[in-house]
Image (cartoon, rainbow, N blue to C red; front, top):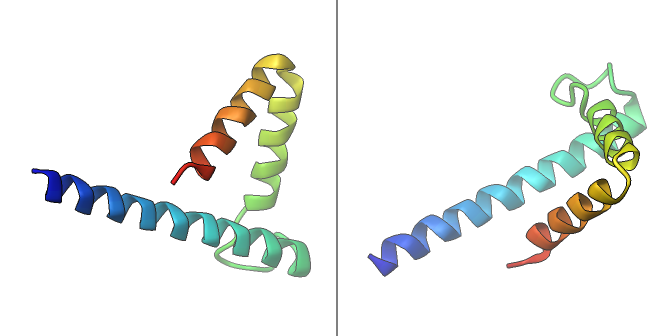
Length: 76
């Protein structure tokens, strides 16, 4: 059972890392080329901007949410 748990955990970590790399690539491509000119980028830059704005408008709750997100992403 532990081997299966470790395999699933390792797979999910790899999928998460791949997703973060794709988001970073989409942001860079969106900034360089423009958000409407790259087919797979979509609205990544505008979605991130909206997320940051909504967290900023939330005050201390947004700050706590950002802290939790950073903790989750940095914990390996």
